[in-house]
Length: 166
Image 1 (spheres, rainbow, N blue to C red):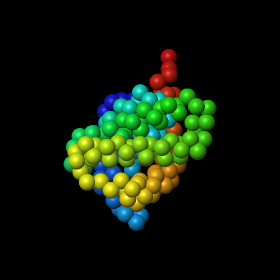
Image 2: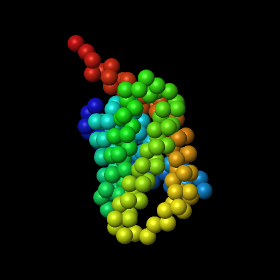
Image 3: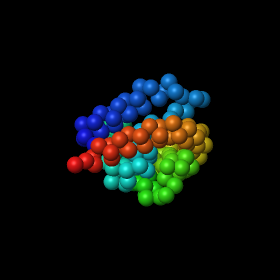
Image 4: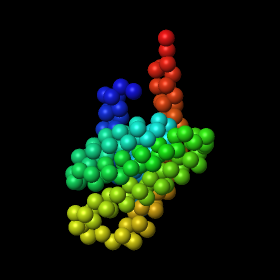
């Protein structure tokens, strides 16, 4: 895929997280759009592309959010890596695989962000964060990936078709 198109997609997703996701909040919980996209792409294209997409989306999100670099990018890189492990699975396109993977990745990405916060000596109420933010976000992300995965699967298929030719 054209690297400029990838950059535009990732910056667009990070911008949507900053500008649109707050308006999608339900009871103060919003979906993690970059995590959803990185997880879906990692499942479809493997760990290599998943990690790069995670790094790109994460750095853009770190910059948009004004947090220390690595706050979100560390978790998104990890999410791309973990999602890519499911690429070779026979059932990777079954709706349970993306849902299960994004649930695990929601937990991992938030733990990575909490780890960075802890390293920076920010006060964290771990139990409260897990029950009031992470678990509800996980449910939101599961619904989100079920909507986004078919679109990205179509895009991935179109890219594969165009790259094969004589």
